[in-house]
Length: 121
Length: 113
Image (tube, rainbow over the protein chains, first blue to last red):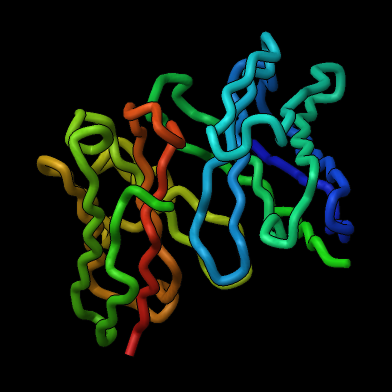
């Protein structure tokens, strides 16, 4: 079955960087865009950007441009999201989610289990 | 920061029908982009509930239905059950280029009385 498995929880100090991984299985990794979405404690969902695993092309939400980098390693079907210059308000659960339709406005299915990133001094 | 507005909470007794609205604008829902819905049970990742405004993925009970009209969309749950208690989010696409391309609703907590 299609599955996304993310790396474990992280604790980082303000100003540091974090890199979260998302390993895909059960489908052709390069055939579907991958999105990253985050959710701060008790808050809603916030889209961060997508990566095209085939070409490596990316598109980031304006809010995160300059701080986020999305990459992939096709040899191990894994996508990565790195967020730099961390602040306390970056504390959140970070999800990867597969884009089903590869057209503007498509939906996400499935989602990874989430990775909690805590930023604290 | 969410550009799609949902009511913070809705509640109903078991067996009742509840609806959740998702209000957007001319740059997202009103521009013709599809609306999708996700269910998030406590402590878990979101799960696709409705895609393409009104389509249910395999395995989703037909108690869940979606619709879209103008700049808004709605999710209806009929025959409410205890296991439906969760947070629900709508999602669409925004062409305003002023922020995010993919936008989520503010989220609605459904409580089964």
